[in-house]
Length: 454
Image (tube, rainbow, N blue to C red; front, top):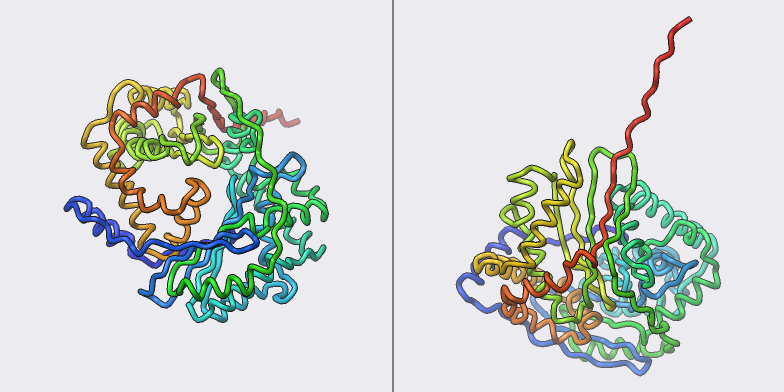
């Protein structure tokens, strides 16, 4: 991600209001359902009109991420997250950012295993400018060798900071490398260090031509626009860009794991860290919502099961978390904890596994289920209160769920999760044979022996 996006809501006020609505049985007021159309070059465009404020969120979802890479070019998708802001034919280096700022807008981008997403926020008066600039960099991105080498250094530095010199980042990278033996989800989004240094100009041009073709992209526009205006500008600026051969299908299927795997890292650190990973299904699977509810029961808030036991009561951990990470292909459910100083990581891990086993053998209570649903619904509604949040959700539902309209069924899906669903999901995935454990052990400082003075 290039920079930190800011949300200008009052989160406490919003959360309280939404929770009150839930408790009172009030239905969230949905905006008019978005419309969509396809350009002749294959790009899909989703438009949701919202005229409450004179602003627009325009997102481009390119269906290319580390999933579409191969050994030798890992991290190349993330590299374009940087390169796309470094000039094209009409708008030169830094012009994209400068023109946006002059128009009162801002931007961001992020890369994941499955996609690379570009985010634009701007006043509706700048809509034509944004179409012109986006079309310029999609069609005619610059491949200036000096800029490539400069950004290569930036990405290498980012990897060093966020992975090599980060205890959490390094442990997470090694966990994935052990959990996936065949599928491309096993290598890091930022790329292996040697690959970052080895990308050639031909590699970059081929990846851009494949990944940034309009037929490999979904555009989402939410805000103070009209469908007709967006359609007219899309046809003028985007439709003339030719389609390309899309990324090759990812045919490799990760084999079923047949036994627990363990990774140990010894590194300078203040406290140990432990991560656990279980293979799960895709984001489109029926279990996806139940797993989100399950993670909320375990770690969301001080009264959650894992926080209450490991952090508050038994003081085995400084912090603990869990979340489902599904994807276009089968993903993983991740647990992470930092044992307190002096606590054997094996003791903290044992307590965590005991709580996981309880989910497999006993239904959660009605109160836990209701609380988890309320928290999930509040999070969903908070995202949908902003044009930016809706643009991101619409694109993610289109990519991961196969249809952006499913977003408006999300509330019903959350409400439909039962205690039996949560237990069934835990039984299905949280099997010891399906588990990978990574532990970081603090490296002891070398003992320096004093020598007798002569």
